[in-house]
Image (tube, helix red, strand yellow):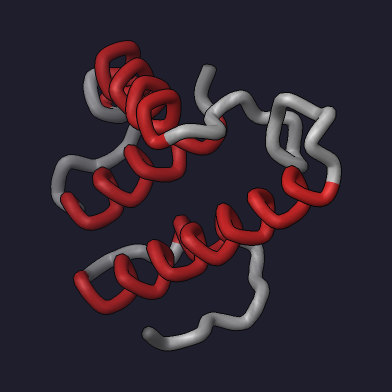
Length: 100
């Protein structure tokens, strides 16, 4: 696995345009999640990850992503272009992190 330096995941999200940039984004998202898990383990009394998000399991992550997709018609009501499915799926994953 290629190590990705710590970067702002939302910046990489905005750069997704093809399979290569999608994988760069997903690697950074995975690294961001791993950092959050390490911080939670260091402070187990806190029920959320280090950013205060409740998506601490894959189930809650996917539930959040699905809720965003359903609420926004997979981003179309938010102006996300259908012409870039790589970005649509990247936003879907990102919303698993942030959407409640």
